[in-house]
Amino acid sequence: MPFRDRVYLDLRRYSRAARSTHRIPWKIKDWGESTVLPKVFKSINRIVPVAGLRYRLIDDISQVTQGLVNNRLVSSGSNSTAQLSSTRKHDASNSLYYSTWFFPAADFAIVVQAYRDFCLRIHESSHYRCDMPTVGFRVGRDTSAMLSPSFDEPMVALRAISTQAQGWENFAIDFGDFARHWGGVPIFNQTRDIPADYPQQVFGSRLTFFRKIRRQFDPENRMMNPFLSQYFL
Picture 1 (tube, rainbow, N blue to C red):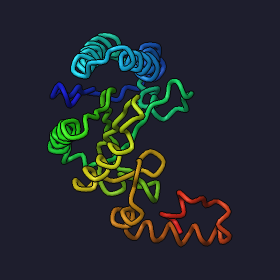
Picture 2: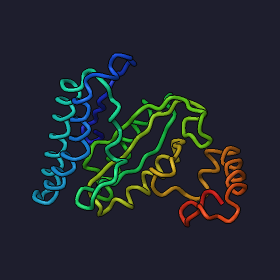
Picture 3: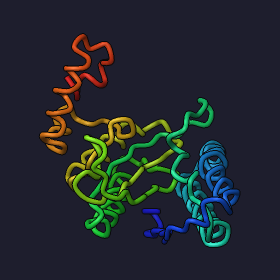
Picture 4: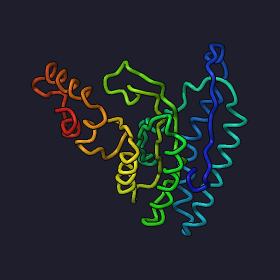
């Protein structure tokens, strides 16, 4: 919560026994974060005209929710349903706008403070801010996928989420500028406004090899569209 200068951390340890128990609290948590909070914040945005009061109320609700849900409801059990909220398909009345960038886990403490300053600066200059809390999650090193964002080292993702369409596109562009400055790694289906030349800088020879394999298996570009072609032709 950058405007409260606060980060809530889930400290997790793997337990084989937890896989078959305590799923309901996590489902309630996911339902609240993906459905209830966005609808509540959309309503507040419509009925509270004063921005300062509106965002103070939104942040109060977010802070109370984080304290109650994460500290009381989901202190144990399976988190298999977590992190699905903003990747699901929503109807137009319940849409969430989001963009995800990955940063080296070793730099998390520095990046998260820089992200807080970035949000404050953007709000001061454009009066736009995300009304949903930014979500972060750690991703272990994964070499099984050629374009894995954590191919070289563990990463921490920052996912900016908002219910407000007006101003979002400019925010996503600014967020991308911020992320590239801090060595951010995009993920093609969840990161907004990736410059066409940037993936080559990040993925290097892996992207070159992927393009070669793609041309071999799809010489007529039947699986391409304008969005993919800017990165994979």
